[in-house]
Image (cartoon, each protein chain N blue to C red):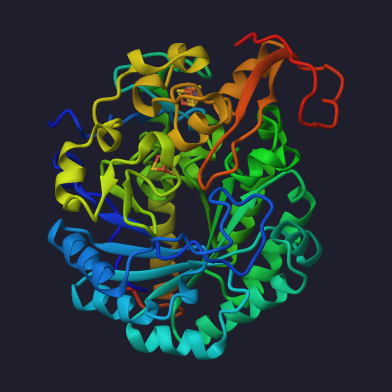
Length: 68
Length: 409
Ligand code: SF4
Ligand code: SF4
Ligand SMILES: [Zn+2]
């Protein structure tokens, strides 16, 4: 990578502040960065599944198109 | 919406070239703003002629520039401004305008649209009373809103630029409501900088510790704006990181402030052909050459005054910024803001993260003017930084020539 490209930071999924890429413990909130990322992913997946289920149900009831 | 041509790709970083040029077409201005960094009023005595200006357009296109923003003074006070807009478009670049809009009449807007103008940002620094006071002309707020409405009706992308100065805080929520009603899609906010007339009238500057109050206020406006289709954009000198950075600077992509871009992908041109790495930088220190003497390409490639951010490292930082967690990425933020305040870049008290860190230790930072600016366009005076207990009594009303306070930072 070119030396001129800017550094890209990561995000602590517990406090949503930027952290250096190899950080294990968030310097801002003290969270375990990996644990927070896994928890976030789990919550994100659950929310995505819930939205899909709701969409399917509405489609079954004829309230929205299955592709909307 | 037109293409976001200003967005920078990894390749743009690999090969510094002026993606966005900001061009002061003339220093002539019909407002009398008491925070104007360039002290605009009369045209410079030796502004570029039409042929020279058209050659600048040609050179910018050759360098790979993608957007040219015309500023002033007021760009529309030049008779050939629409000729230049048309040339920018014919050369394949985006043409945009930044204006105070006091006399940006329907006829002028129509002519600019016919020439190919694609977007406009209008400067609005408060509701009517405060805006007119700051801009020095009664009725200028109403004229600015009228111009915005006509630009919207003519299909231009309309945005508002606002300076955060000491008198505006109470007006901000009502300003947002007005902009939403007007159909404004983006609102860029930036701090008033201690340059030109703002260095003379330093009571307009906010104190660094006020960021603790200002940032949550702006973020609440960001959230309200987003719910109504208006994007509040924190400007490059509204620093940095802290709890809101991931939400409002990067949006979905979680990008963040990546340091000053002057001379990397940004170029500034003064009306007499002086070239700088950013239009706002003080001329005395950052003028890299003049188009009357050298090609822009040569100035861009060879002038140290334009290259100063390309090789900047944490070794160039000082004060709090030198030891900051974000030093490698941020490199003390906006060079214009820091140089004009403290006489050199590399240490920036206008930073939310920094203000929060100090607050947690029971401290705050305050600026105190110690030197008048000489009175030239894009000049600056001198300020000292005072670090003090956060419950210190309110700062005295600032007057030039007051007692010097100790420098602690
Ligand atoms: S303290 Fe300085 S280096 Fe750190 S984030 Fe703020 S401006 Fe940037
Ligand atoms: S000096 Fe400030 S405004 Fe200019 S490019 Fe750098 S960060 Fe942006
Ligand atoms: Zn955290």
